[in-house]
Each structure stands twice: as structure tokens, then as C-alpha cells.
Image 1 (tube, helix red, strand yellow):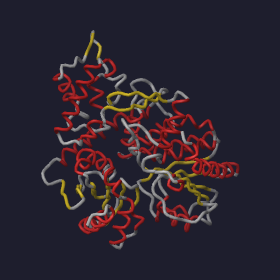
Image 2: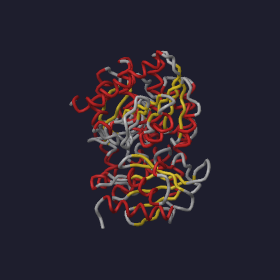
Image 3: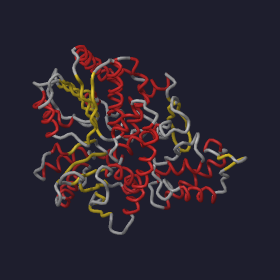
Image 4: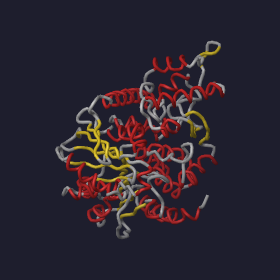
Length: 485
């Protein structure tokens, strides 16, 4: 590990943790506000656990996005209170500074791109981008939260698996054979492995491969989501039967780990062939072989034992309106919440399958310039449009090397939710979707802070009816970024 590379970030965490200790000693109440995805939920779990161990008073709120109006609301009710903004806040630093600087203390723990800003003793930010690290690939919001929690008390090193859950939730397992890179690997995974909290295994990446019957492991696999198999038990059984893979031995269901090498090769080859036939990108199909991260303290057969499945569970709960359930799981509740989560997961898989099938209908996907465009209208839930964007970008956009832009009408209030996904190759050419979406909104006369994210993935909100204008400006800006005329 090149610890010197992370020295600046770690030193910043030490400084901020000192401020947290001071506020705890003053009996301040901490309000944790975090993002609705798996990374944000994991971050909330980490900071909640860390504060609980200090006997601090706190509450947790999970929100879709941070807005200037939300910050204004916080400024009206902050007496004897401090705020944690997790997996959000960096893009709105100036607004936070102007509205809260003289009223309270705010801890921004984020990994999205941040804007240049002045230093402040009241508005404290821990962000890898401020220390020369890539928050898009090297460390997530949960990872930054873990670094802060670890600085607060070394006991919090047992939260390292949760930080990895957040990283997977933000698709940061992008190294060779789906490994972690950067700080995720060098510090967080290292801590988890050294404490025997996480076991690293190379295998076919099916969910529950150690304990579930093969057909169920295939049915439950959602990373990647395999259209036509994920969520459909009968089709999974038929798929395996056609390969002459024996599902039972001596009356007992066989698991993936029970298969011999020849059977595993046969299964992997058949899955890759199937995925390519239905339009998946080669790189995505080949990633079915990779690195698994198993949380050793979770019971065998649990949906939380595999880190990817854990992240999927948190996404399902939060995206379908049960963020409290997701936070409970992160805090260690394994009784009723785990049973409830399974019902939510089944609903989540079914919805994704329905949305993907809907997108297969003629005319659903349009292309113009550098963009592939999906308009989910009021069919795709706006809470899930980011999930659909991520899944569908893996199916086609990578091979075609285009930016996928997805729209969906907001469930609450007027407006359209936008989720955009780029490709690694376009990022290497200069694509930065965070900047592109902000600039697009600026060209449209809208507030740039309504957009935010990373170079390869970003989101925004725009008025209903402005989609064509948005597409026109975005195409021009992307063309400029990657140097095409």
C-alpha cells in the first residue's frame, strides 16, 4: 500500500474527527442526512454506528437529493444541532457555506466532484477529490465515511465491510476480475481481510453460490442483471437442465460450489453465449467470472453474506420507499427487517424485469449524436431510473460507446429526473458527465446545481417539456469534451 498517497486525506479525517469529538463533549445533537442509494445508506450506517459508540445523540434522514431549499430548511432549525451530509453536499458547498456557516457545524462526507471553495471551521468537508484521489473509482461515500469513523475510533474498523458494500453499490469494483482499486483496496479491503471480516474468492459471480441451489443462485443474480433468467426460477431450471447440469445429488440440491471445474466452465460459457445473443456487451458478459467478497459474520444463505447482494438489498429497500429498513440492516438488525427485505427484493427484481421488457418494445430507445435516449415517461418509477440507467448501460451502451440518457417523470412534484451513464473509453477521451450536465443546465438558463455526479455517471432534474433542448445542448457539450467536431 502506498500510504503516502492517502496521507492528505487521512490527515483531514483526523482533523475533522477532532471537531466531532468536541461537539460530542458539548452534547450536540447530530442529524445525519444521506443519499437514497446503497452507498448513501451504507454511509449512514457507518456514521450512525460510530456516533452510537460515542453515546452521541443523533437521527437519520434518507433523501433523494440535496437541494438549496433543503439547505434553507436546515438553516431554520439548527439550534444545538450539527449536520452530517453523506454522499452529497460537495456540489452545493457554496450554498451550504452561505446559509449555514454562521449557524451550525456541517460535516460534508462526499465523493462526488466538488467545486473550489474557501476553508471554514464550521463547514468541514472530507472528499477524496480535494486530496488528488478519484471519487468515481477509488473510494465511495461510504468509504469516506469509514475513513472518518476509523479516525474517530479504531473500533470502527469492524465497519469496513459496510464501506465495501457502498463501493460495490456505486460500481467501484472495476479492477481486473471485478476487484477494488485505490483506497478501496489498499485501506478498506485490507482492514476487512486483516480482521477476518471479509473472505475473497474467485468464482462465477452468482448470488448465494456457496449455499443456494444452483438454479436459485442464478435466479437471484442481479449484478449483472441477466434478462430472461434473473427472477425467473422456471427458466433458470430449464437453462441448467439443457446444459445437462445435475441439480440434485443424493436428494440434496447442489450449489455452485458443488460443481466440478468442467461443469463450471460449461455453465460460464453458456451464460456468456446467452448474454451476447440477447445484446449484452462482451465485457459485461465476461465479468460473470470475477472476485467475490464474502462477509464472514453473516449467516450462510443470508442475502447479506455476499457484498454485492448486500448492496442490491439496500438499493431495493431504499428505491422502493423503505430506507428505514435498509438503515436497520446496516445497523445490524437481522430479525424482522431481514425477512421484510426479502419481500422487497422480490418486488424490486420483478419491477426491473418489467422495465427491461418494456424497453425492448420498438421505438423505446432513440439515438442522436453521442446519445442513446430512453424516456421512461410515467412507466419507470423515478426512484429507479438510475438503476435502470446503470443496468441498461451495461447491456448496450458500452459496446456502442455512447452516453445513455434516461428520463422519468418525477413521482413528487413537477419535473423530470435525468440519469446519464458514460463509458470508460469516453471518459479516457475527456468525457465528464458531471460537468456536462451542469453546463447543459446553465445553457438552458437553469440552476447548474440541479445536476451532479461523477465523470462517468451523473444526474439532473429538468422541467417537463425541455427534453429536446436538453439533448441538443448535451450533445454539443459532449462533442466538445471528447474533441470531436
